[in-house]
Structure formats: structure tokens, C-alpha cells
Length: 200
Image (cartoon, rainbow, N blue to C red):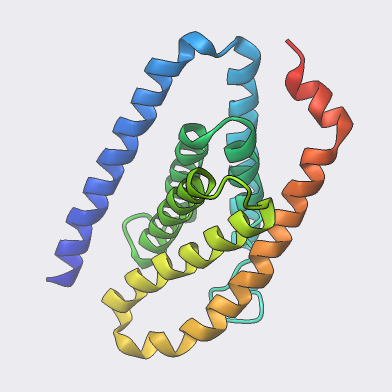
């Protein structure tokens, strides 16, 4: 029964993501030049590569814990191209990586999708409500929400014993969130990258 309910929720989330992505493409394409579209394509490809590569690496200190290298791309896109594009990339990355790994519509796929969705929504909202928040703060907040989203799904499948991992996962999320934020901060300061992105 829980699994049937979960399938319905995920279907609704996928449908919502498809609507948002279609809306974003249809509404904003008039304001995007061909170079911007190419940049977004490259960003999505990078997120996929990082996501697939990291899935083959051993767990980071705790079972199921990842550094989240693909989140570097999502956070960078959030700052450079805005919320809609970051949300589209996060959802597409989660779906495509899950399908490539063969765990689509399974606990692992649901965890990735829910964590990515909550993370991007939270980071986008934080940037609106707290405009002076640093990239480190935004990244850490996103990492914490990512963990909470994954725990929500794990609770459905595994029950309350999984909550014993929550304090450790949240602690690790502070570290990985700070690391991702630091990498994005360095990318933002890179002059060559700035010139490339601003070129028309």
C-alpha cells in the first residue's frame, strides 16, 4: 500500500517537473540566445557525468552518503541562470541518472528525486527571502534539505530505525554543503569563466 501511494506521489512530482520545464522553455526561450541554450546543455551533461561517476564511488563515511558533485552544477546554474533552469537540471539529472543506474521507480530513484527537488526549491526560496545569504549558506541549506528529502522516502520503505542515521547525515550535509558552496564560490570568481559566460 505504501509503495502504491509512493508511485502516485512520484508520478505527480514527475508531471509537475515536466510542466515546469516545458513552461520554462516555452516562456523564456525568446530571451535566451543560442549561446545560453548551449551553456545549459553543457551544464546538464556535466551534472549527468558527475552523477553517474559518483554512483560508482564508495559511500562517503556513511552508507548511502555522497559528496554531491552534481550539486556543484545545480548551484552554479541557480546563481548564473536562475531558479527555473536549476530546477529543470536537478530534476532531469535525478531522473536520467536513476534510469541509467537501473533504479528508476525504486527507493534509490525516489530518494534522489525527492532530495533534489527539496534542495533546489529550498535554495531558490532562501535566495529570495535572504538576499544577502552567502553561497556557502545556500549550499548548506540545500544539502540539509536533500538529506531530509531522502530520509522521508527511506522512512516509507525502511521505517523509523532509519532515523538513527539522521543526526550523522545532517552533520555530514554541513560538510558536503560547505564543500559544494566553496567550489561554486571559486567558479564565480574565475575571470576566464566569467568572460566565457558573458560573451555574446
